Amino acid sequence: MRCECVSIPSSRSGSLATVFDHVGVAVSDLAFSTDFYRRLLSVLGREPSYADELMVGWEDWWIGASDAEHPLTCGLHVGLRASSRAMVDAFWRAGIEAGLRDTGAPGSRPAYTEDYYGAFLLDPDGNSVEAVHRTRERAVPDGCIDHLWLRVRDPRASLRFYATVAPYAGLSVTHESAEHVQLWAPDFSFSLVRDGRPPSAHVHLAFSAASDASVREFHAAALAAGYTDNGAPGERPIYHAGYYGAFVLDPDGHNVELVNHNR
Image 1 (spheres, one colour):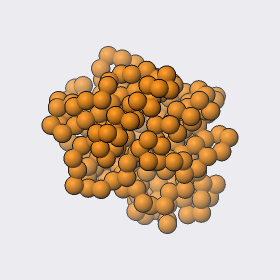
Image 2 (cartoon, rainbow, N blue to C red):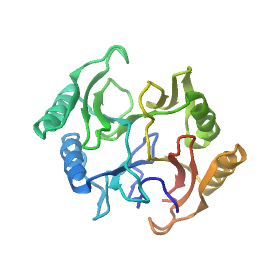
Image 3 (tube, rainbow, N blue to C red):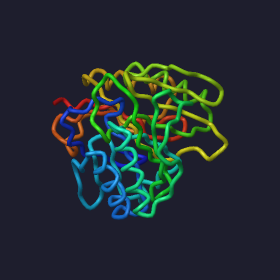
């Protein structure tokens, strides 16, 4: 597999129901970033599901050391779930006590939804990390990915790509404008925005598939639409037995995968 970010050896149990199977980012200092994410995710009740000298993972969130093959990830925003406002407060305090930069103290954000309560920090490489609490009917574990924002060069071009792969990734388009595209899966969101700042770079996005056939169809549809192959459909036993995935590049060069774990 050729990958623009982190290669993921999955240890997923299938217990998480999120829009993303996993998201991978490359960091400048793995030890420092591991300490950062351990502190914050432990407040949200999450501990690593995998760790070695090259990468650390929390099932749906992975960090790995940047190098020539895996350039540094930047310009990303990730929102992580919290089951209470008190948990959001504790997340933010843990980051501030660790010396991290505050980009939004805990508080209500009614511009998003009436019940939205979040707090924002910058990780060691300047990516935005948020804990968010909202009233929900669906029970989802604390600390899992709630939403993701990518800054893109051209939201319309990104929309064409993600509309092509959406049927295979379980996504649907819920908002479309010249500056903002939002895709949705039940109780999760994924946004593509243009806000005048440099685009996000070097993110690995993996979506779940229910069958190997869906992985092949995803890959074929993307290539038929003119997008770039980044790894043909096939089994990747280096990750685990039964791991069957395919990879393409979106218009901003992010490595987008569909994977069936065959568990």
